[in-house]
Length: 263
Image 1 (cartoon, rainbow, N blue to C red):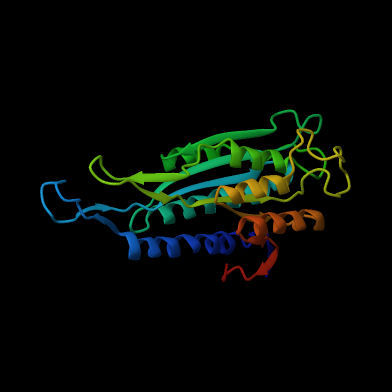
Image 2 (tube, helix red, strand yellow):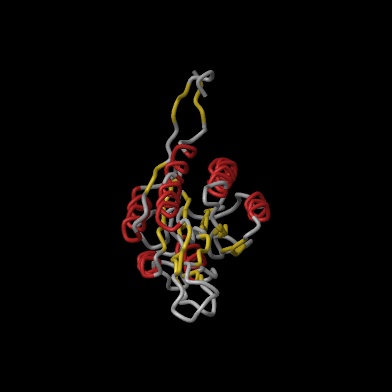
């Protein structure tokens, strides 16, 4: 036996992924094609005109990239790639855009950057290149700029709130995009109660995670939160609260002993 640093990340993220095939199956069963009956005098025949339906997914990964996340980020990179490729291969094949936001902390705790927003990418390969460019470093005190990372993802990404299908001679039909965020980190926001806190008043920019969670809820964004092994009880409560408000789920990473052969 050996102590493995492999977290339960595979099971956790694939559990989240299970939500997508279910949604895609429902989409396939109910709207695999959209058929519109022509109004009298419109169109070249009286037969319905049908259009293929495309499930739409905008997914954003918000990742704490401070030094304590080094092990988690290594695993996250591997398994996010698996998840994206799995979703991309669904039938009907979804129109998927992958977004990435990474955050650290405010100066003087961290000087390299506060947040990095890579935007949405239709090109999955390019999105994965962005993911692989993330390096875990710095961070200062225990709490991090969680609210700033969430704000970038919720309010500074060009989410497709609706997708319109139709032609000029027919009514337009709106289909709502699936909009999940995966928040992955091991530290709570500032001002929540953790010790070793340089910003006891909270985020210097006046952002609060709960306000942001309600903003996400209003936009139909579900946030799935995944906490690293170093998360304290304050952070766990925040992660659970964010997931509850937005209709997502909370998952906790933990160390486990596994047999080498079984692993």
